[in-house]
Amino acid sequence: MVKKVKCAVIGATGAVGQVFMWMLARHPWFNLVYPTASAARVGQKYHESVHWVLPFEMPANIADLEIKEFSYEKMKKAGVKVVFSALPANIACEAEALLRDEGFWVFSNAASFRYDNDVPILIPEANWEQLSKIEEQGYPKKGFIVTNANCVTTGLAMAIAPLRKYGIKSIHICSYQSVSGAGYPGLSSFDITDNCIPFINGEEEKIVKEIQKILDIKCEVYPYCVRVPVMFGHLEAIWLEFGKTPEIEDVIQDWKNFSLPYETPSTPKQSIVYSAENTSPQQNFSFL
Image 1 (tube, rainbow, N blue to C red):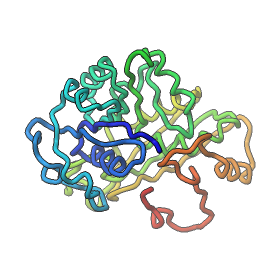
Image 2 (image 1 turned 120 degrees about the vertical axis):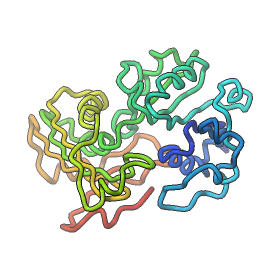
Image 3 (image 1 turned 45 degrees about the vertical axis):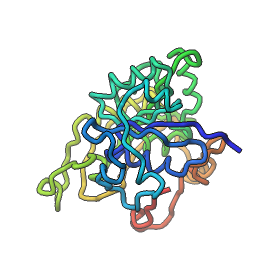
Image 4 (image 1 turned 90 degrees about the vertical axis):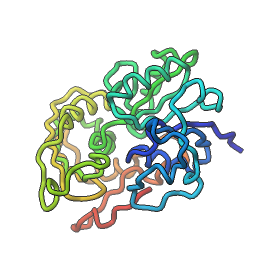
């Protein structure tokens, strides 16, 4: 039996925080004991405090959790070791550094520390070996920060990571991004209804920096990002230039064989699913 590690979610009521809460609600490795939000929400039950926006029901075992004060002293007293951060970048830059200095293991959705050399942008299937960068932050004597990637970069990295062996020379990507990516309350309905918005502030710059760091490649990257009137799920159209052009059958087989070298409770059975159907893939979209 695995002894569960006590964890906290900071920024638990926002859209990203809700995903953390949902994924941790019944996780066999983590015991969610310390959700935080703004000071005005402290003391409220989670279901009273949050405007639930995810397209599935709130798990019953998190509904009555009490919103806690953001306090590293109180987190320590509660036995928290792991912190999942859904804070905005302007707040995360201070709060996450403080938590790391106090010995916590911080896994962050914010971009505040993504571009620091000693902070891995972790996509386990693509670059699990870069987790060793936390030793440059002082681990195991000190805490650490690990970040995830920008949403579009994650899908891009997963798709092309198994193709690095062909020598990626350039990447052209057009992304069509759902409104969920803007968070809640997000965009005005007057802006997005029956419309596509061909600008997402800072998105293209993130893709360029992150894909090169995650895959440890030096190549030209040309992104173009569009917000589209879809609730959940992004679409990407990607063109790659290789040093050695692979056969289509080789690419399909590379995707089929692409997986983690180990298994976790949230590891998909197959990391990339190739569809030969000439139809709309988003019609088969589902949450893992």
